[in-house]
Image: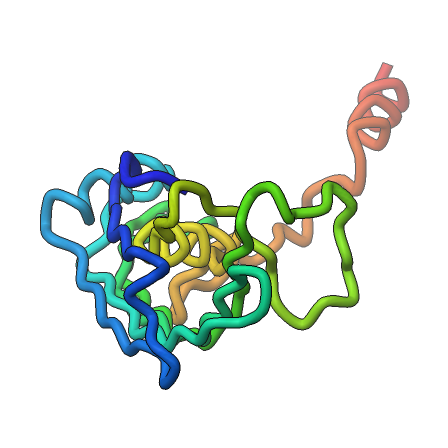
Length: 167
């Protein structure tokens, strides 16, 4: 991860002491707008994350985090925008890129995130977590599906059968 993302918060790995490091990151209005564009959603109104970082063996850095934010999504039922809140805990392990095995361990409790140059990017990690947390079919809580028309034919073939019967 490098510091070129929409929400870059690089932290030098050597800044993490024996007792760990607590870090809070908060997106600016410009970063929120850039993240909304990246995520393909109407708006990111607020986004923040609190990280606790701990050094591990071989340059690995374990991170536990709490992500909170307010987003605007388009309802799949009404197509109207609505505000939604995200609040998630997540864990990951920053791993020096040369140590990262290309094989993915699906049984691992935390995701492995490569880093290089002695810098980890907490903002990019938070942005990726937001992307993972997005509901693919966002629905406003009070949205209801329109009632099915009882008189409508069950299939297009039923329409053809009705026309054929009239001729």
